[in-house]
Length: 181
Image (tube, rainbow, N blue to C red; front, side, top):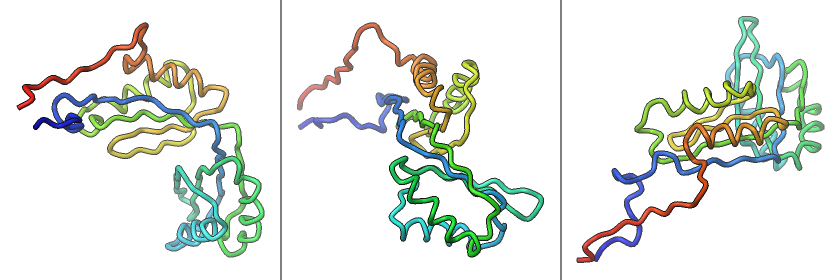
């Protein structure tokens, strides 16, 4: 008997499946965190114990022996995270916290991304061509996500749709045929 669903990793699989977006995230940045082993573990343990869900994470080092750690969380949890971080300031040793609720995430998804070069370049070129600043980046084998200013989110989604030829005047269907043996 034939398979009901085609092999999603086979030669007929689409490179790009689609574009998603999320308006419900807040960016949190801890500034001048001591650059030593275990600090990130302490930070994310404190947040986990407080029931905070983390999505994107970026750590950027400096020559001063400190790092900035930025992460996103659901906007509904933003009010909870500030007191947790204030209570942990001495333990974690960071200088300050910045909270940015005016962000949105755009994500490109596709199983073919890991085997096709140029996908990342096309994604970021589409944003750059529309003068959209990228605040954070997160990737995996099947997705690229960018955090952008919320006022640019709709334009970011349109730009990526266009760049990957996902715009269509009419819906097209792909039909997989077989012998049925």
